[in-house]
Length: 66
Image (cartoon, rainbow, N blue to C red; front, top):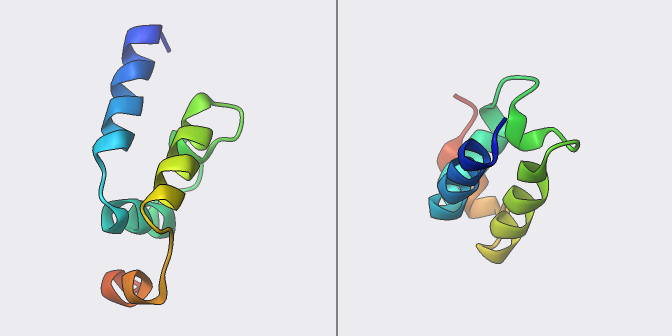
């Protein structure tokens, strides 16, 4: 992935809400690039998600299981 595409993905992560991030974390298909620890997205996603409050019981209940 070139630097420009990578930056667009990072920008997307930084615009996500806590609920969007929690939902993606719970329902993303196996191998989703944001959760690949070999890619820069993992650290960006985790940092942002923690800053927003992470997976609280309220958020967990709001997104359910599908």
